[in-house]
Length: 302
Image 1 (cartoon, rainbow, N blue to C red):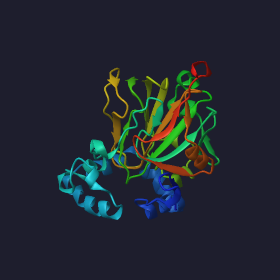
Image 2: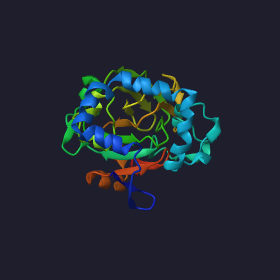
Image 3: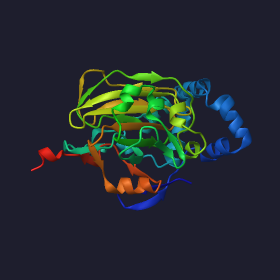
């Protein structure tokens, strides 16, 4: 059971988890854990299942998934019968009006739909995965020089469960560098798995990019793959100007995670998100909504 905080009605709710029984069995039973290490975490397993989900026959899964998880298809560009495969449905695009983007330059917006944790004044050597499990930014991106830029900065972890909109976006206008890809395993990023696999984010396949934001200085994007994620697809063009809310990329099937790092004294995160994170509870957010604001240096304040 995964409890999260609903910011809209200020209440706690229970997340509907796709495949929760299988997930619990895999990460809790001796047989499941053996299969996890031998087969499930490996690229071939995710690639084969991902291949099936791109075939037309996989369309049969869409209707029941929509019904079981109350997916609102009135917000999507395509209708139920228009998807060519389950994966086509999974990384579906939304209508522009479905996710209004906060246009205030001082507002920090959510970069996708999902469940958010936020940490301020981070220790680069002890980033929090879950209570008791930490990892290092250096291990996450394999680059000491880049990691050092974010000493005492802010870290945002957005978890996209399989029922979520699976595209991720830019938080601001600016330019983005080329993507660096790191090979790895394919563990689930569900909290159940995070409590079982040490340094999971550093074990999984991941990609990272430096985004030169116009209002928030340099921002480090890290996209982490997961079980059955056939690929992380980057749709932006490097070294070209992007606008706040523009798409950066998407995940194919599977729950996935996007992690953002900000330099020190650049942003403040909304208090309700910080308070829930201290309690170990994720906050539900939607693309484009405000989740914080830009810090204004004392020298520029009136």
